[in-house]
Image (cartoon, rainbow, N blue to C red):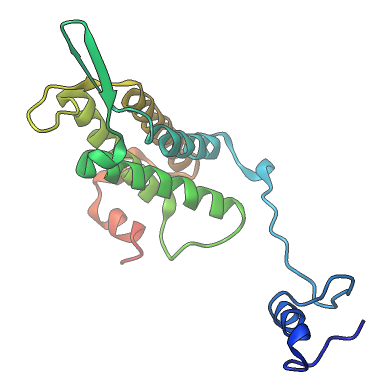
Length: 193
C-alpha cells in the first residue's frame, strides 16, 4: 500500500501523520533500521552490582516511611525522602546518580570527562554520612521527636551497599583510599588539572 501524500484528503491525514511520525503504516515494511539498545548484564562486576543494587534500594526505599512516632501505646509512621531535603534528598540523588552512571558505563557510554571511580566514592561517602546523621539524630520534624522507621533503615543500608561497591570499584581500578586526601587527584577526578 503506497503512502498517501500529506494533505491528500481528510481521511488520509491520520495515516499521513502516523506515517511521518512513526515511519511506516500498518502492513508496510520500512527500510529504516532502528537501533536497539540491549543491556549486557554480564559486563557488570560485583562492585557494579553493589552500586546498582544500592541505587535501586535507595530509589525504592526512599518512598517507604522514614519516621515513626510512639506515644503511650499509639504508633504512627510517615514521611519519606522528600520530607528531608538536605540529609535525605541529597543522599537519594547522589546514590541514584552513581547507579545510573554505572549502568551507562556498562553499556559503553561515556558520561562526561570525569574519573567516575573516585567521584562515586566521594558521592556515596557524602550520602552515607548524611544518612548516618539522619539515623543518629533522628528524623525530627517540627520539634516532634520521631524515631527512624523501616524505610530509613533500609535506605541507610542501601547507601552503605553503594559505598562498598564504589570503594571496591575504585580499588580494583588501581585507586588507593589515600587518594581521597590528595587535592590534585580530586581535581583530576572532576576533569581539572
